[in-house]
Length: 366
Image 1: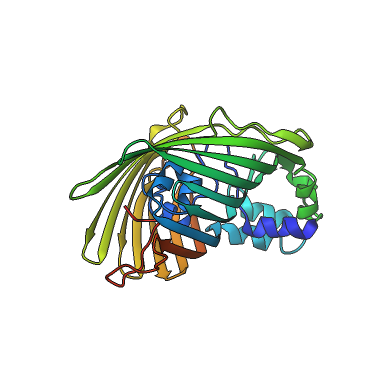
Image 2: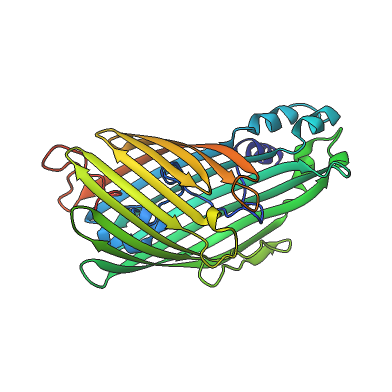
């Protein structure tokens, strides 16, 4: 158990402090595009982001695995501090810093109107504060879930979707006195605080409308964790409930020869009373034959991303900033995320390419 926790501390991330508007499990593509995803989700991405988009599948798409670690740019400071016995000099070095890390893994299979999948999201946020009474704050969440989704085409351009998730969650939040860490093994002290486990069932509802024209425009609405997701305790007091998240999004895409250009907008946490700036997300992506170039606006900060598409192998990286304070510009936390995906996308004739020899990318097809 000690080794597992040490690995989490080095490589995993957090379920957000109460003040950050945070979504677990966002892909590197989404983060590179400013945190947008629901309006242009296709293929296996639809199960997790917008099940109504399962109506767009015209064959089948198999995501064997996507593995995506993320980490804040200051994470090395924490790793160095925990390398040996923790002492006062480590406290002085880490004071005031918020260290973030995350590991996400998921996979799935979709056919027209139906999809199944599974994911594991593991998050951790650590920070040192309160100089008069030095405290080490730990916020940890680990989810493992199965997902089943479906879409109903109401008209040629409009579809509704639903996804059900069975979630097993391990969660811990604690304020640990720095004095209890000095001269001890930090992993042992932290592990003793991570005791709450539980399981629950979540429901996501979605709608997608597509306008055909010079530009293909998609309007989407997704309501995640409808009614809030509650967890039945299996250890300790059980995890906190997961509050619902109502999202509206739009995307416009157009092909220029072998180039595809996608622009997206999202307004998240509509039912939340937080700062509006932190809810706004904008993104753009230019897709070439093998490379995707991305940029966006995430919670008041610019994000960047790059993707390399090598047939069934997809590599994505993103650099972005999350806001941990109440308003944009107050407490920025710079982060990186990378992911590797193994995908097989086939059209209804079981072909990997179209008539022009260009790979058919179902997750982006309009």
